[in-house]
Length: 433
Image (cartoon, rainbow, N blue to C red; front, side, top):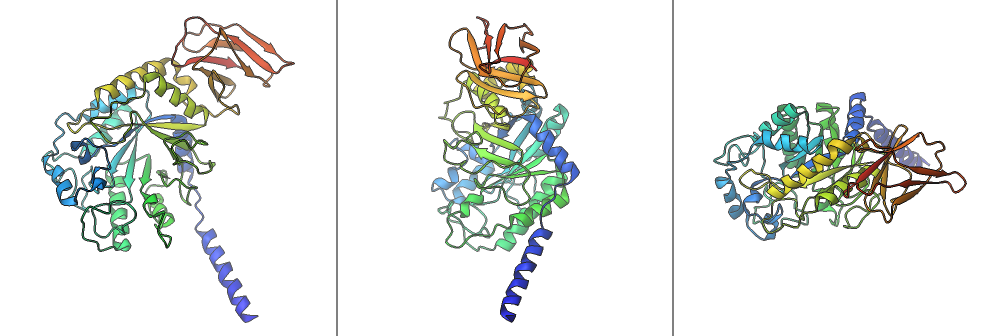
């Protein structure tokens, strides 16, 4: 009986401990979440010394040793980098936020850190803090700055090796306490030297997903540390699993929430704000041979599809080693911006609609306004299920022109006539109920 009592006492103490650590977002954090949900469109930037090899951001994992790879830092000189030009291009495209890779798996910091000399200021002839410049440019253009941060490292000897970065030749002295302190120190720098930071976007948790003994990343502890520094900083983690205690938004890699075509997004959809990330071409980091860019129409439709799922789209660009954004990427941004300037109301601040994707497209909503995004319609009309009762008006959002419609209450359907000349990327119809 005594043994049972002790066991129950320990269980109760554990439950009390768990409950005591339950994350309760601050009022400012909840406001930041609401703002984030309204953004709907952001730009992802994968840029580092790996761009010099022009083989993508995972090039160090290809068998190259860390000694050879790190030589790229000594000749990294992005002479055409212009943070203000970048920020203006993003704003003109209609993006509301930018997520920049402050440090990727190769361990190179794209900001001036005191925790290691392996950073863009101390290790390159360029000697400029590109993150500081981008932070100022984004603030000038009214764009929120978010930061990607890799929690795995293919260079540092104190990082406990997982399933990647096994051939870099580094001396292994795994010490997660040491590595954890390093991450804490760098995150403190990011949140205090480049404030305000809207969100931290973590990656690399999956590096230990096949360990024989489950690896403890100490994420709840890490998250509490971050929220103590900046309570309204949103936290997300690209771990491909159910959100962990302390996270503020949920991300899906290369897939819309609820889909898993790429095999990385099989997790359940949570109640948190949602974001899907996707590449503009095929790679995240710059790869010179990858010219397989999605068309402007495809990207516009992806923005609408994400919004229809109640999700933001974080669209990736891999800047070139000279500091320029690829010309094709700029062309796509220009096309998206032209569409967003006349149709953005159907994207920003909208919510998901309880209606699956139709043959003709998807729908978003905002208060009593329903927006139909017509991608591909056969014939001169579209039909959709309708149980919302009265229809006050139906018009083309871009032009404001009224459209002919027929409401069939018995069949619970609404038929709308389409104009012969319409936007082939995404013709938006606004219905006021």
